[in-house]
Picture (cartoon, rainbow, N blue to C red):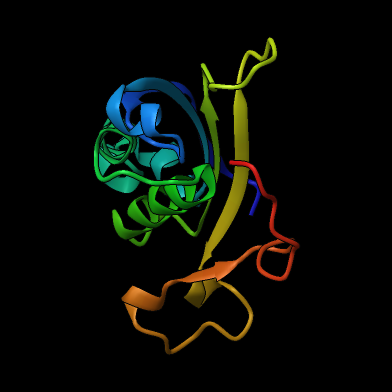
Amino acid sequence: MADSIQLRGIRAVGRHGVLDEEHQRAQPFEVDLDLAIDLTTAGRTDALADTVDYGAIAQLVVDQIGGEHAELLEHLADRIARATLDAGPAVTSVQVTLRKLRPPVPVDMASAGVTIRRVRAGDAPGGAGRSPADHIDEAPGGPGRPPVAGR
């Protein structure tokens, strides 16, 4: 499907990271989302009920960033993806780009980030019949990649 809703530059502060200072001091994060969704009906009806309320999705992102601590950006991005897919069945997959805007590293760096893509299990090959709690299949390049140390 070629239709998508794009949300860019959602910003919020949270306490995420492996360093002690990151546990204590909130820092800024920025998120971009690409939601795969069939927009045919909404395009014809002009009705919010026939699409996704992107304001509500943006609030889910802010809630995740401001919520429970995550050591890794990968984990926080996965939580954002799961919350987005849990918001309703219309979104068939989501790509999440998460950036830490002031990473505590000893070099000049604007941001550190990750991009993940998650697909609702019923929309992925072999995903039919799984429960909503098991709704995510990893996109290509997911599990099985070597771990990256130092985050």
